[in-house]
Length: 194
Image 1 (cartoon, one colour):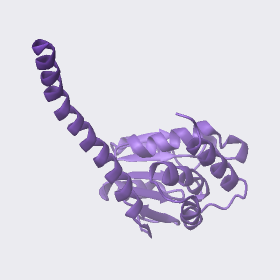
Image 2 (cartoon, one colour):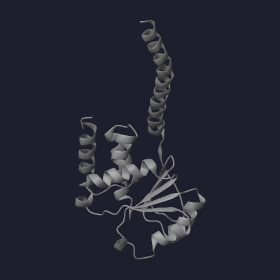
Image 3 (tube, one colour):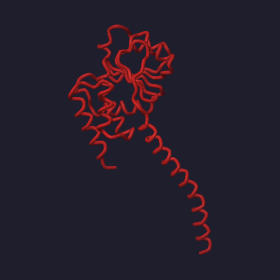
Image 4 (cartoon, one colour):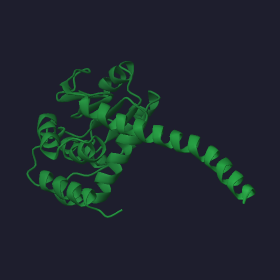
C-alpha cells in the first residue's frame, strides 16, 4: 500500500511540471492569436507596386514589376507567394528574378472562381502560417489576395468574418463569387467536428 502511494506521489510530482509547461504553451498560443488580431492593415509602398497593403509582416499586393522585388528584398521580404498562373506572366520570369535575389519563391496559381477550392484556401493558410517572414503575397490586382485573406484572418487570426471581408475589400477583392466561397469555407471549417 505504501509503495503504491509513493509511486502515485512520484508520478504526480513528475506530471505536474509537464502539465504546467503544456498550459503555458497553450496560453502563449492564445496570446499569438490575440496579438495577430490587434495588428492593423495599412497602405504601404515598395517600389512601383500599384496596390499594396501591409499587415504585420505580410505584404498584400498587386503584381510587382521586376525591379520591385529587389526593393522588397531590401525591405526585408524573405518569401514571395505568387497566385498567378505561369502563362499570365509574360513580362519577365518572376521565379528566376526572385530566386536570383536569394528569396523563397512559391507559386500557388488560381484565377477563376471555380479554381478557388478548399485546397487553395488550405495551402494559402499554410503558407501564411509557415513561410519565412516577411512575406510578399500577390496576384495581378490583389483581387485573389483578398479572397484568400478572409479565411486566414478568421480561422488563424481569430477575427469576425465581417471584419475580414472589410479587410479583403480594402486589399482589393472584387470578383463577386470569391466572397461566398470564402464564407462557405470558413463556416465549414469552424463547424467541422473534432
